[in-house]
Image (cartoon, rainbow over all chains, first blue to last red; front, side, top):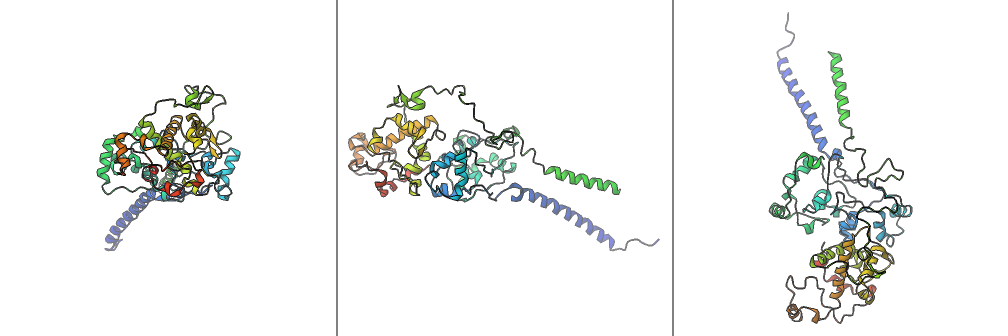
Length: 216
Length: 233
């Protein structure tokens, strides 16, 4: 019986094995990268909201403190979205005819909630507490990005577990003075690790990493 | 052979599809301020039945919760005022009051400068200097004129802390050199800059105490000067 395969078939079969591995590997790599991309995590894309509220204007522009609206951030798990009345504190007198604000006025007239689309949406199996963070020197912008520069807010971080643990394992990378926690735009000092380590000791910021800390 | 590989492919697709389900991410439980599919108005947060009083929330103390003693506005604070509370008041004032009333209470905060139709009242007018603290508490709680009540934004104790701080602001613009403790008076009169710790929140000495003018007449340059400690939050 004659040879079925010519001699080059050896090389061809080896090459095809390598090619198969390469294709399989790149598919896996692509999936790996896709899961971490903004497409999957929702990072970096502002949402359409009923009212195009600008944090940039209200914080950096007008100088209103985060806590004027997010009143429960220091004492509760949620920072809280303000009731329509908080908007009307000012907008009953200023920009009263702006069409952009009609949903706000409508909500105030009718008592129906103004529905906002949640931008930073953690999975429901992860427990998060705002007050535990802001009272230990974790600033708003550490997780929410430079909100003071965002005309429309977007999710600034991946919010994946890996990202949470990055800080829970080494919080000195991010800790800041408690008096600077609510700065709407904040950049770390050049010697952040040094300052952060000092603040970590002072504030006793020792985050836990056991499963049940967040998955409770 | 062919059959089993087809089976493998189908189960792989089913697995991949299953991995995309978000049931665990978005559980049908009520989280604060989330949308409810159960209640008609779509709100997860429910109001208690009218007239309900939560345990420990009766708020029977008129002085503390309404700023009134025997039906008239209280002239005293319901608890002791100390430095820590004043500091708390300074911080809370910066958060909730400065947008309209300004860092020094002249009534020309940023929101007013941006076109609020009615100027905010200056805290340094005669009427408000003489108003009892209970009146201040009532205004913060229930509002006054075009100012809405801040009961939902500022907890009771913080309202009192703010009032204590406003009293200090008022004093800072209506004081004489004799009111300054002897040790610091010398520094004040010699024109030396106060050292850190000396008269921490004192505004620049008021010339002649003529600060009874309504907000509209307030000199903007006087307001913009002491920006450093008071606008910091």
